[in-house]
Every structure is written in C-alpha cells, then in structure tokens.
Length: 385
Image (tube, rainbow, N blue to C red; front, side, top):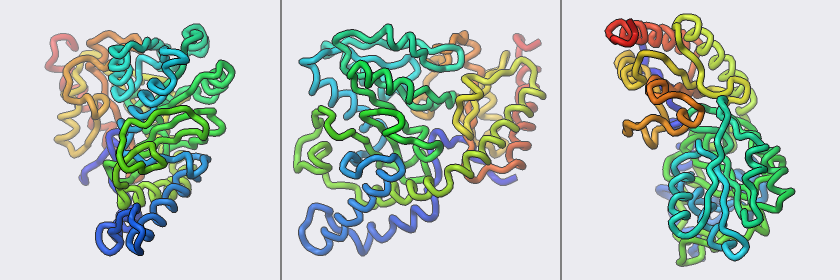
C-alpha cells in the first residue's frame, strides 16, 4: 500500500505547478525587489503581480495585501498592531477559547502589557454564539479576533454575522483564515473583516511565507522597523520565490476550489460513516454541517489517540491527534476541552484532514485501519473491557 497522507491541516505538499513557478526566482531571476536595476525591477514586477493574484482570491485590493513569513507573524502583526495603535481608544480585546496558539499566546502577552482580553466560550459544536459575543462587547473594545475555521476540529465560524456585529459596533475584526483560504471561498468584503491572516503551506504553497490582509483605512502600527518594505508594515527584503509560490497556489485554488471541495466533502462523509458504523462509542468532534470539506476529528472512548496515530503510521497512514503546533504536548487539547469533553475523552481524539491526492480507496483503507486499531487497543485496555 502506498503511503497515505491525511494531515493536510498541518501542512500540504508543494504543488508541482507552484514549484515550477518558484524555481526561476532562486536562480536567474534572483534580484532584490527594492533594487532599481533590471534584476530588481524583474523581482518587483513578480512581487506586485503576486499581490494582485492573492488579492483576487480574497476579493481585496492589492494594496491591502502585506506579505509575511506565515500565519503566526500575520496574527502577531494584526493583534499587536491594532492594540498598540488604538490603545488610547480602548484596551479590550475579544477572542475565543479555541483559537490557535498564535492568537492565544499573543493575547496573553498583551494582558501582561495592560490590555484586557475576553475569551469567549463555544458551544458543543465548536461555534461562537453571537449572543455571547455581543454581551462581551464593552465601550473600550477595540478588536475582535475569531478564527474562520478551527485547525483541530474544522468547524467554520459565522464570520459574516460576526462581521456585521463588529461593523455595527465600530470595532475592528480580525480572522485567522489559515485553514480556510484555498479550501472554501474567502471574501473579505462579504465577511466584513478588517484583517485576515493566511499561510502558503496550508494551500499547497511553500513554507515560510504568508500574508496579512489589512483593509484600507485600518489604524495599525508596524512592528518591524527598517527599510519600509511592504508599504511600511513589514520591513525586510521580501521572499520573492516564496511569494511567487503563494500566488501560484492562490491561482490554483481559485480554479479548483469548487470541484475539489465537493469531492472532499463526499470522501469526508464516507469516512465518517464507515468509522461510526464500525466502531462503537465513537463520535465526531465539532459541527458536521459547518465543517471544512476534508476535515474530521474523531473521538473514541477507552483508547489513546496517540496509540491510534502510531498504529496508523505503521500502516502507512499519516494523521494527527490535534494541531501540529502542539502535537508534542501531553496536555489535553484546549479546543476539545472548550467543547465540554472530559480530559480522557480529549486524549482519545484523532484528526484526519484529506487533500488533493485522497481517493475512495484511501478512505476505505483508513477506515479499516482505524477499526482494527480501536479493537486492538480496547482489547488490551482495562477500561475497554
């Protein structure tokens, strides 16, 4: 059996078309985009063309796109930049309990600097309740940051409704859209967001490059001083090969998203049905209706997710027990705890995220492996007897 990779929420392989687009900018077209000679102008042209391509995917203006090193840096610029620039208007930030550590840790750091943060709970499906958000808003609230879709459970938040509320209250809205850009339609105008973070390596682009959408007129402070690159928001020589790769990945996503989303949804639902049919005391974490196309997070009683992961790995299947950023931690997932699961239930979780190479044959095989693994480990567990 060929190796089966089902951990696309952690990272994706670089698409062949993306690699081909990048290669010339490592060799013949190596110029610095800030140089005035022909080599520099060539790099600048590629940079600005890439900005246009990414803006087209997001329904944004090119001047609203700032290239970064990835989602974590984009999140930091968004939260810290808004907080520092608008602190005279207020020091209160609202986020959710299930955000990525790039948001949660930044918020905790800002709390140490005198800012106040409200961490909204979510319901059993992993969704923020609009009524809870509205109650949390204060006169000194300057920013709401709610992720578009969760990296562990794949639940898609009601960003359009949140955006309408933020606009009504005249509060900046940021979303970490690392898991959604390239997978489902992301329209910054329709959602009403002021800032949006994304990362290339989640949509078949290279690692080490991402972007931050900043709506024109947003009051935000730059965190990096220097040569004034990226419209003064992010000083430092631009990673032209990586940015070209991100842009090509964005074009591919725009062309293939609709058909690929439908295909992955069918495979996702088939895998969910097979596993839940064959394994007793198993469940899906998060909403099945408001979920990313290729994303599943299973829960199993009386078995450790890490044991399942290692068993599947021995069968050539790559999956995850949670987010890749915290996969070496022994603590229960903060996301699953926020759903109301007990710690032992959290430890029995398995995240499966499919991509372009996934097939029905793969799904059938993975379902077989999961059923075998659960039966095996429950058979030797005192709790499972």
